Length: 100
Image (tube, one colour):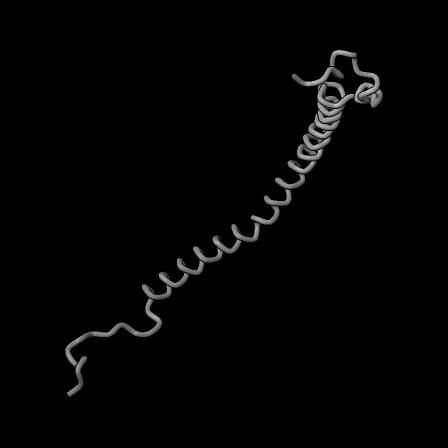
């Protein structure tokens, strides 16, 4: 006697199995179609966001470059553009007085 003698087995191609497999196939087909549509969505997103980022970059550089120049040139009072002011011969006389 075999182990499965008392069990009733359904035929390999029963209607329940066929319906279950068809439902699983349909679910998988829907997932495949969804995944295939994602690159198109990404393309649309990139097509819209690229000009925005380009404009934003141009605006940032338009503001940053003059601001950096202004900071370095106009607002920096540590350096002088007149080297003759740094010369010891042109300093006021009291700066040449000997140290006490």
